[in-house]
Length: 465
Image 1 (cartoon, rainbow, N blue to C red):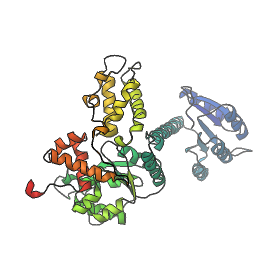
Image 2: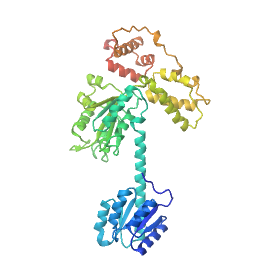
Image 3: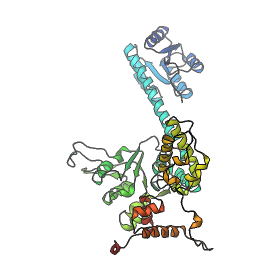
Image 4: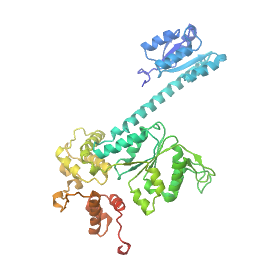
């Protein structure tokens, strides 16, 4: 990638076979604050470009030997980052238009007007600067949202990332499932920014954060006067994501009546705004995410079965942090380095002896909770070394060891899901089906408990409520 010259004065090369014209142009550019050099023909111009990088070239189109059009082709082949402005006579504007088709930024008509010259040059350099900024930003985004930057080496995570990387190259609809805090949005961004749509919009809508009565308008948009308060027409998030990716976070919270319209979007690639008389075609890729068990919701009748199968073309499951204990040291190291720099505490250390505490904890809030804990430790640690007493109580508290539990493991094997279901059921019964107390007993969040209750179909009989 080429950047504008390190000098504070952009470098401009003026190419013209008329000495008087190129000298006058050079003088005007220098007066405008630019570092300008000249060449009498195309060959001399290419020689200067080979020896001294230039930010912009202003070339006459009609020159003996190598024409301005041929010089333009050579520059675009050999120095594609260099901006080219062509100079033409009034009667040959068609040639200037052809030059722009070949890559010239703009053209100037003879005789050169100083005001027009300064305006075109300034605009060209500003356009180039903005393109460089956008390119740098995209590279930064690609680095940030590359699959390799999703931290962890556990087998189940790597299998999910491998599937996600292959899905990213297609337009297939993706459903990301995982508990709160496992990084579903980060994975969705990695899929988008590693897809053919990466230079188009990535639009997020959290279906659980917007009131139901407003969600339809936010998603599909509305026409002017379609309802009280609709004083202007509004473009919905789906239209905003045109040619890009629409990320539907917490899709399990979407009302049934809107699920029908979303199904139409996926099947027909069209939407109908509130108040509109006809549908409009759209081109978006759908990536959805949820912490809920959509299959259980389908059985309950709270989520459409046909929509579920349309969303789950590529189902991806992000494992909870408690199933990735081996990844915790790397995650802690990354977050510690991040917040030490942010809080200006480079001397702070975390003794290796404390790491088993991090790995033994269940992390009901997953990676998000881990990051918050590390940030809090960096802020509140009194000395240059994090001590046991600095840790949150949940990490200091000893959990019962496995050998204190009475487990009869049959030689023929056992179903882990059956064991988990039985543990959840017993915790609920022990606490009188108080979800908050049962979650505390199992050292998980209430949301995670409800997720498991839905997963295993655990409900208290109505007559016992």
